[in-house]
Length: 232
Image (tube, rainbow, N blue to C red; front, side):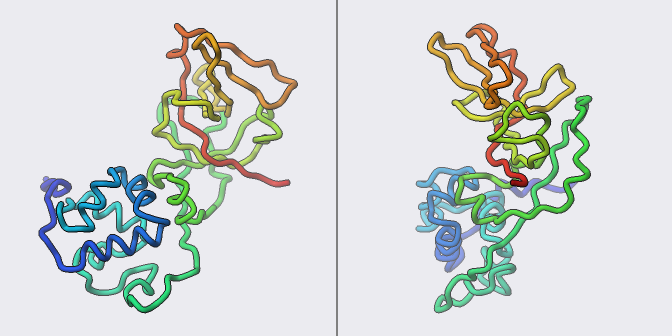
C-alpha cells in the first residue's frame, strides 16, 4: 500500500512563490488560480509570500492549471512543460492556447437512453479560457443534448459541458436533470416567489413545470450546464 503524501508540506524552496505567481498571471490573476484549485485567495497569497507551505495536492493542482511540470514548479529545474517561455523571466508568455480534452459524461448504474456518447469524437477546449471562467477542469464532463425543449438556447445534439459537482440547486441556471432514471435532459431551473422552483423550457412549445417548496429535494440534478454549443 502506497503512503498518502497529499498532506505532506513542501519545505521552503527558493523561488517557489515567484513561480506560483507566474502561473497566477498566466491564468488571469491570483483570484482565478485560487478558485480553480479550490483554496482561498488569502491562502494563495501565503503560498506566494512563503508564510505558508503548500502540500503536494495544491501544488499538483497549480501545476495542472498552468500546464507546467510539477518538478519545475517545486524545484525550478528542468523544462516547464507545455509553456517553456515562462522559464525565462525576460520572455513573454506563449500566445498559443493550451488545449485539454474534457471527459465524456458517465453515469454508472443509471439506465440512461442518451448515455452513450462515443460519437462525440475528440473535442479540445482552451484550458486558460476554462480557468478564467472559474471552472475546475476535473469537475467537467461532456455530453450531447437530448431533445429540443431548450431550443433555441440548446438544440438537440448540441454539445454541453456539465459541472458534475453541482448536484444541488444553487441559483437560477440550466441544469442536467435525470428524468425517471432513464433520460438526462437540460432544463432551466428558477426560484419562484413562493420559495418553490419552476422548470422552464426555453422552447415555448413545451409547458413549464412548477415544483413546490416541500418537493424541491425530489429533483434529481446530475450537474450544472456551464457551456453549450453546436452547429448554426
